[in-house]
Length: 429
Image (cartoon, rainbow, N blue to C red; front, side):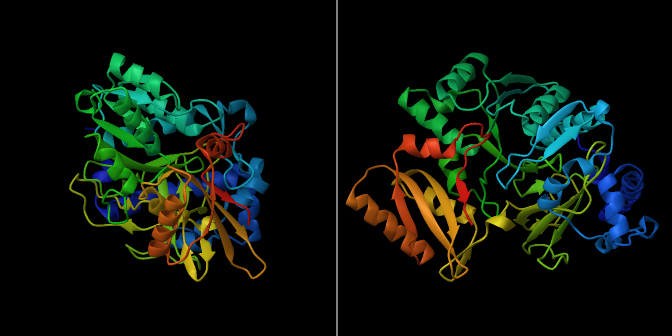
């Protein structure tokens, strides 16, 4: 199994390495980035004074709103050098274009190569990609390129279509699936309906994208349990974003996504911009290393998580990110309770009466939020309605408004034309 040498070094060595890379990045931005040239001038930043990671705090952070408003000002190369144009999903407003040079594509392939090896992958594996490879989706090209660098086999089946997925699993016999974990539930249901013996398939593991499969203590959450209780495969959790062009992937220990210090400087910050200690909640704030077309400096992702520095049995000395608790923009204030959508989805996932759901949040005139749960139930009956409400009361202490929809209606709501991934949280605030 390949592990980059820097990830095996002491925290002090890693820190020194990152400070050298930061110095190179600051010079690059000063020379090539119209946005950061103006940013440094506006905030009276002398990059020569930024010598350590702690010195980074003198540079103000920025969020997606700035990237949306000044998208092309972040570009550091001539457009003739751009090899690939990707975009963010647009779930938090206008999609942002993230262009990549050939060097950036090579970095992206390296990122996924070390991510797959972190999850135990090798050239002997065959990966089945159950996700879109079009619509300017960076992850699709990243997974494919990473697998090619690994030297493994790959099936580009695309999203959905359980029958087609199983046809390929049975015919080609892949060993690893790359999929949204809730889709694995649908694969299991299809297998049970069509008498496919899950214990006799070639699949050994799944790289889970887009949804949490673990609780904050790293035990499987409801979704993770629903998969593994029926299908004896190993699940690996991941976290990534288009802007960071980097992934955090679990190793076999299953204790959080490993940081790759050669690709990213990471700060976990409280609402005032101060670093939080290990185990405390904070916003993931990133500085990209080695990105040529559109590098980012102290970019707030909006994602809330914790981090852990205890040594990992895999030998890596890097810190590990917890499952994402939620997005800062998605925090809900409801009848005296503060919660994030993932926690609410976990509650709904535990209910046998709920087949699928979407959460819709809107504001009111007193400054708090209103929640409307759009649910496809197992049965449209008073008994099912009472049971769902009783479970919500027990878990949340309050009962949000509920609208019951058929599966067809709910899927139409989740997958409007042109969308890249199911829209399960609708923010109307």
